[in-house]
Length: 310
Image (tube, rainbow, N blue to C red; front, side, top):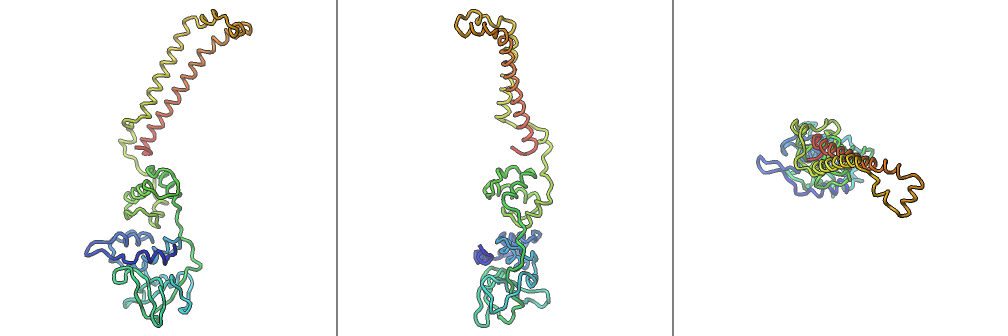
């Protein structure tokens, strides 16, 4: 979608009534790096334009001043203006004040602008063409520097937000949950989106702290730990049983065998060799089972203590 298409999807969004704030508008501030804004009464026309640009993958000025767009992109003559170009007009009595919007159309002496904070809402309004300070278009503008979804997922996992799940490049329930958890712990607006504020916080954030009681604790009712303990027990019994059995004549049954295989083994003198090796092969198998079980048990406990699993 183009920034203009994204802007049209917000038509009707308005500031919250009275002291309430519309989280959609607060999200716009955050998406251009101004998550410190707590009230939607702060002028947000530039935040709206910047948000739509960033969502389309185009870098905005990332400023809250409308006139910052006078130096953005490339200039466009009024006669060549197209829907989606950005228009800037003065507002207020100060030289730095202004208003910015997406050009919807120009008819006669009027420019129709699709913008935010127009009567405290997103809508289309007309302004005299004579008031235009300039029209700009996204030329020679860097793409919005934003991590891909997969990169965000990997970074969240590296920081300890393992609830993000597999880094599959899709924003599903687990990814949204991990983003919200990260935002909550870093005082960012609680919106499950990838924006400038989230990207910058991910770059500078340290590993997620693990509670001391968890770092030294054991996973409760873990089937992996229980199965590992059972395997270790069975393996130890097997080792003890095999070694104990060596006290009895191992080849008593083999010596009584009269079939061709037994005679062949006797001929090749393999009976003595195998009778000595077979029990120890069994012991080795049991030792391998025990080692694997110990490793699985240790890995499960480490995952719990590091916060990778619940």
